[in-house]
Length: 362
Image (cartoon, rainbow, N blue to C red; front, side):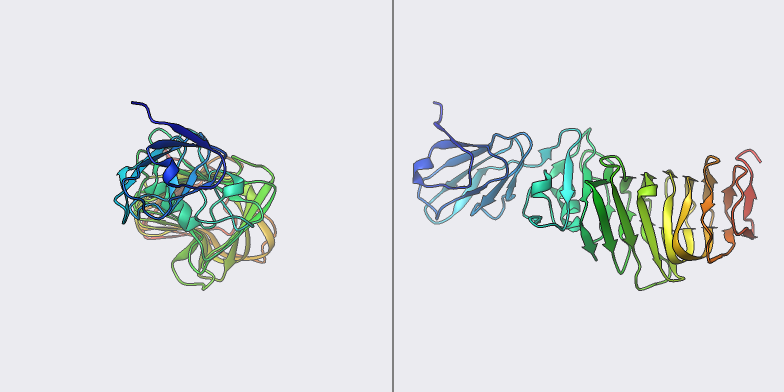
């Protein structure tokens, strides 16, 4: 026997009149609220939208309060409590799914995050949604930092891989500027997590300033790779990494990395130790593009390649750009730096078995 279907498109508090019915909800992100428990009252809620979630209020505590597109949930009551008879599980995201994050008016971690108007407020919430709510099989979730946002001690952390996939994308969105300032790293990739920082994939009209490690702690950086984390980066001319002192690195590698690449360089400002610091671990990386100076810049050295690591400079486009107040020598210690014929400003100091080769075959 078919159940009656009741359509709603605005935020609604359900009642006993909805018992035995399927509630077909459209209208974008709306809130659906259960009343106080009603004896022998069963209700099914179906999200009829393909691109927006529904917020569930008053539902059982073991139910995700976000009902994602095309999902459904069924509840019943014995008159004292509501209990779930059917739970939606993870949302199988379609290709190109964007999770918007910003600090603008209206942004909230209780939102679905699926549109600029219903963006999440924090990077911590975005990472949690991807890990706990999404099934990313054959799809890469995209986290979009919204222009005008200012993130303070809210790093974007990628730890382990999302269900069904191995990759998360981080991009800028809109027209304007994004700022992230953290006492530790602004971005961390670790424990087999994979991140594609495709800064200009959604917008070429947005820039970002990242200032991590404001405490100037040793062995730290604005982008921090740890324990087999892997990242690629493109569109780095849209970002400026600001150093907070001589212990800071723009990129710091703590532990092995499977190998990936930066294409397009990045901008650097203020004071750093080594801009690109590969510590112990035996990873391999390719770097190409310009490192451009923004304002007065003091740098101990462009690269530190240590402990069995390998860094390959790819393409002739790599040039340190700008008149640095101070730029010291790069360091290669028991590692390999493949210059591909590029002159490294500041020179290179080799230690132990460290060496600089002009190509992979030399």
